[in-house]
Length: 168
Image (cartoon, rainbow, N blue to C red; front, side, top):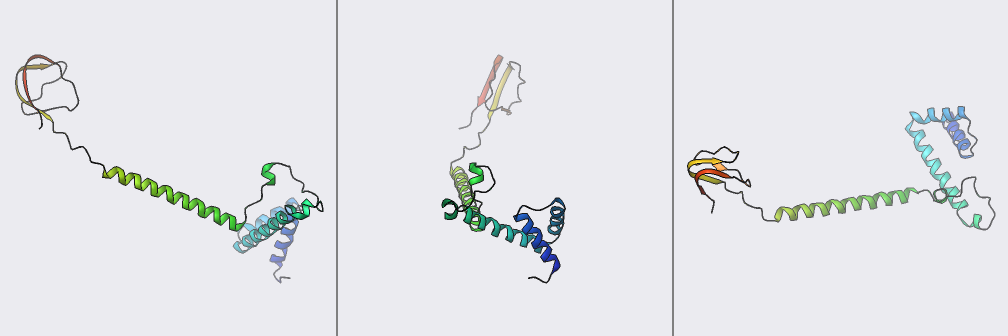
């Protein structure tokens, strides 16, 4: 046994938790022990991993199938029948998720690079007003001679004459 009384008390509380005989006072004491002590937190996690591993191997294994163990007191639902993930399974799952995320990032990068390789449309030179004589546009101001007309806009000439220069 350990010579540390705090470690012994933690072990007693964990045993009571595993046996489902933990009182509310003991529960509060266990929370206080775990709150500020990283070593106690590690021991708690290791104890719970061991307890869950033993329970799932005995209850989920041949002993239960042979009828030597009573089923645990829990509802018979798919979620209750699901085995908890072990540390190895959790690490494998995390690795697979990381690899999937990496593949998605790579695919997005390839798509972005392909998009950059496409030829871009050159900047459109504006249409310029070369000459005008008594020019009036419908609800539009006439730009000065040499000025440009807005791109992709319709102009309705209501009076006068206009000469435009288009880009080559």
